[in-house]
Image (cartoon, rainbow, N blue to C red):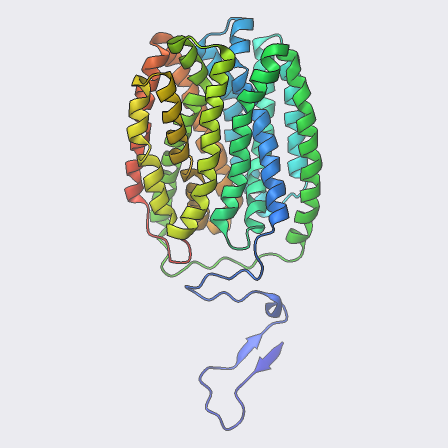
Length: 426
């Protein structure tokens, strides 16, 4: 211990301060002031984790993109198509919070590459599946890879952010959104012409992701072994635990409304275009790509805007702002539909980064679990909703489903219940 006291003859303003050797190496945190990053974002790490997210979600999006092939080959109805989405999303929904809770206690730097191996085997199984049950198992394996990937990769993105949390989350989300948009294109160019067996070719993407994630694990390992983090002290102006619980429930509902709408387009937009406008499967997949690419662009800009103007404002604008356009979509022509989906994608996807970072700032001591809940449960509920929508489409029509889904962004009105965060955690 070292003892520091005022020099003799000088009336001290404070009592003597006792500083431990451990405290000399710890950052000083002052209430009301955000800890400043000594360096900017680790761009190489952010690029690597974003590219891995791109590869991961490219492989995941193949599942929805090959639905027309599976439907025709095995005579599936819309309810069975919805169950495939549910098998994928529900696996990730159940396991992501569990993974996040475990890694909050003990980080696993190489779990990302190990989890990606599940996606690798899932794709190989899907390419060879000839029974509906096997298709469900293959989808669940890909979902398992997603469950392991997202909580720890979100933590790595935050570690590499240099304090620019919204920006880092947007870069991370950008990779995933572009990966999701690439699935329909690759399905149109490869899977449709060459058949279900060609899905096995995409296992090489999973192998590449395993290699990259192993290297990122090498960077991550010393970050978590150097020193245990100091206990997180609550800000004096932070909302109460009850308001935090209400806010988390509202954020889950908002992300659910956004994800269910996006899931309805991802799962059934191809069928909607084929049934209503009589376009080919390949053309419908390209229209889906346009929507998903707009989602990727919107996801990138949402985080920096939240850093600059406040996350609550971005949440308000991004969800409610899409409502007029979603209401118009079921009544638009083919080309007008393409334009509307671009606008909807740009607006509605900008909320994802702000919602997730807002939740992380509400409960900073449970970072992995919160990331798992929002990447897993909210997205998984969207998968459950997709299965319900498939059942509804079987009993009514795809057009009716889109008329119902058009009102989902109105759930954004719940944002009025979000608390005001302290100035440094906007």
